[in-house]
Length: 114
Image (cartoon, rainbow, N blue to C red; front, side, top):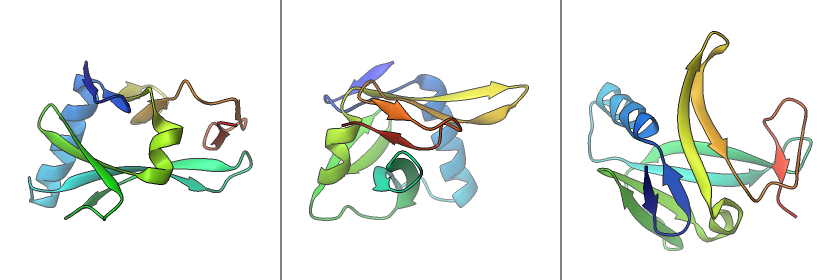
């Protein structure tokens, strides 16, 4: 595992999957945005998506060959977070382990940090 500045830790399995998804897009020059947005029953939810270039208020961070974008709003909610990729009988997907969460909904898709 490698720490990306102080904001996010990304497991090798998560990086492997991110690279695989970039290959599926046919591009290895994309940046991965990790963000927090308002929504859900607990107030906030996570999002991830590929982008071609950073916005003005983005922190650009690199880990294991992947460049991440985190906007100034999201970084305060994501500090210390670990991004992993899990595969189980129940399915597969990215799992975000955030030590800042103080409340989350029963389904696990929504959270709050205050």
